[in-house]
Image (tube, rainbow, N blue to C red; front, side):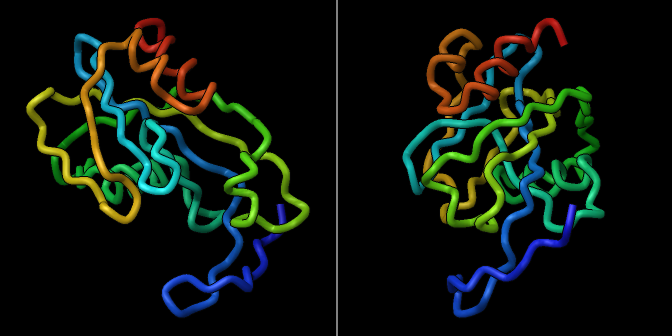
Amino acid sequence: MSEPQADTSSQEGGVRPWKIPRSVLVVIHTSDFRVLLIKRSDMLTWQSVTGSKDHLEETWMETAQREVLEETGLDVLALGLHLVDRGRESTYPIHPAYKKRYAPEVTHNTERLLTLEIPLETPIELNPREHIEFEWVEQDRACEMVFSATNAQAIRDLGAL
């Protein structure tokens, strides 16, 4: 995979690189499979923690730790939490609403599944630029609420993982 090129669109006054089409999906849940869902500020859809690699050398675990911190305020390492890499990857077409973030020739994204079990009372601090609300949801209902089919499948499979 070649290094992403520059995106000519402006973000916070500067040029940003194209997104790398390799991302993580981190399903955060409790021991009784309540699932933490976060509501996107741009499309107002519900999802688990997601995010792309910042650079090709970044490991899946590093990406997941960074994204969990950015989106929920949970510092996995400092809190002694245990992210589990499920070794499952899904490749899917990039949603048209997000296509402009990727190089023109990029049509698909590969997503790696990780899970994180935490107590229900764990404080969550959303990044308001990305997410506007969070909710702990029963597993069946969470599958219905999420926008992404891969996210719904990952939630559905929680007990079997």
